[in-house]
Image (cartoon, rainbow, N blue to C red; front, side):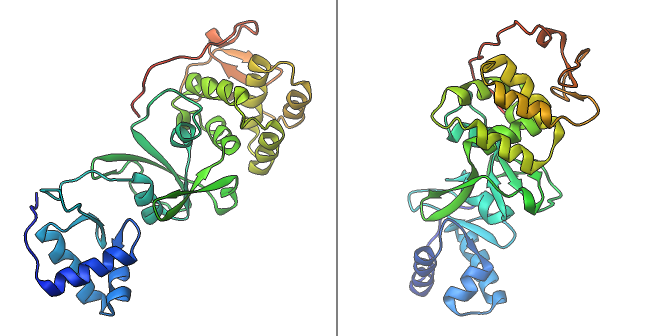
Length: 280
């Protein structure tokens, strides 16, 4: 644990310049370009400032500013989304993190979901006390995104329809199918509801399992949307899949080629949203 110690006039001048010219994080490359020094000198300088407590190291070559009122560099991330953008770009904030952003759930998730084109070795890194869940996607899957500003940093987050689609593609990204069903129900009641766009996104993604889950849930929550339900039926692929791969499923809904748990098999059963918090 490093504590804040004094720095000289020249170092303070350089550090202030870096703070003015950077947004959220400071890398070795940033420092070298801004201060017009070599990368080697920049790396040594940033390391020295970190040891003195004016910066906090996120990973090798990347630092964040330590607030002047802080007594230690052992700090939590002020905005995990900014760190995600810097470490895993091209990427977007998705899954339950985007669900929370669009106010489609009352649940609280402690982990930040990042959809990235990178292939990181560590899929569940913990950075400065913040948990991340990383999922690799292809470049062609980088669509349906909205830019949001976090301070001076522009970050991509999946729009409401793409967010729902991602949780249908992989229910784990929504905390499991029960949570996903609640989120989908809230989506249908929200001003962001756009089933036409949802179908378009699903076709673009090209995953048959999504249409099976989407059609099944539409029958449960929006049975009057006949045309969209039929759209899902027209896109069914061969083979059967599980409603949620993580659950034991012993009932086959043949019209959707979908294995579901017994408790989900009754077509008359109305699922009610669950409350509470979930730590993921």
